[in-house]
Image 1 (tube, helix red, strand yellow):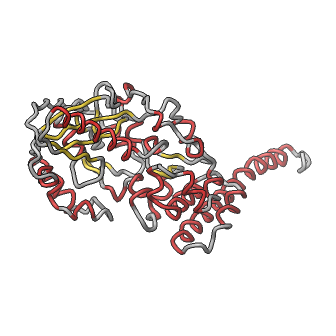
Image 2 (image 1 turned 45 degrees about the vertical axis):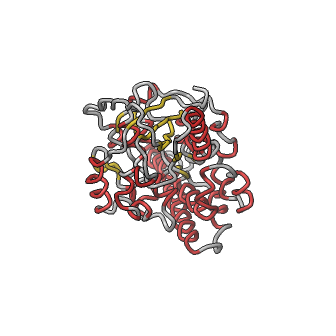
Image 3 (image 1 turned 180 degrees about the vertical axis):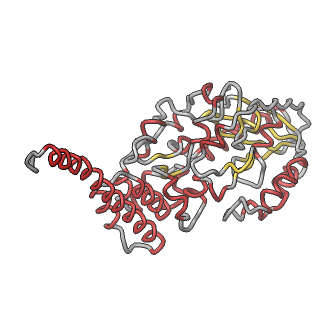
Length: 361
């Protein structure tokens, strides 16, 4: 398509079936500190309240997976920082919103009296249920939208419009008995099929949470410094994932598998410069350092790690908490390494004594 969308679907605005599920999720406090999730009540399930007169929702998807995603090589090297693949390039909010506005303008050229409004994670709107209803895919057990031809490596966007357009049919759910996404989640955040406890999710912990990351989750985060892709990586449907042809979503070199010690040395000016136009900038320099500190704590022992961590002590109380934790993890790992080194030496000494050989043999 000329606007870069890989698929477009249309549905009506009736999401009343989602309201009990949304309320139950909020009642269990699964939204954590994301108070904006509860602030607007059931408006999220009522698109017509966002734009009075809305009759249809045009839902679109756009692939974002880069050609050289380097999932395994980054995740398997704990000395590197892993950024969720959707955030490696330009902020998708701006890209999709601009394209959706162009779509609305094209429709307006053919229909003089039409009102529309584009949304990309920018308003209280249940975008995934809308995408499913518009036939873009089905809701997987990890709560993301899955598509037979594209897996889940795509962004969603919506155009609310007051035209009585013909609607598309939803797809049947095709996850079957598979629970791979649930069992592979490092923190057990998918508490039941289709339900995510955000308070346990690494994406929430590294992006949405403003304060200290609970200590119980820090070792489980590994080297993930912004978001997490594990539930998508394990999904069998992502064998059919399609690569993006959008230059805006190409990885920025400074964010693609960078050494943790380098990231932790960034001052705020450098952080802002490198993340300009990126979704990462929204977490700010302090939370960025917090996340990298946790990853350094999970990295293999190295004096360079301890020195890098200690060098930032005293800048912020919340950051200090994570630095001190990370230093303790590094020291513990150093002690464990020392024991592992000593064990072969002790075994050789025992064998030498048993054979009556000199002790330095």
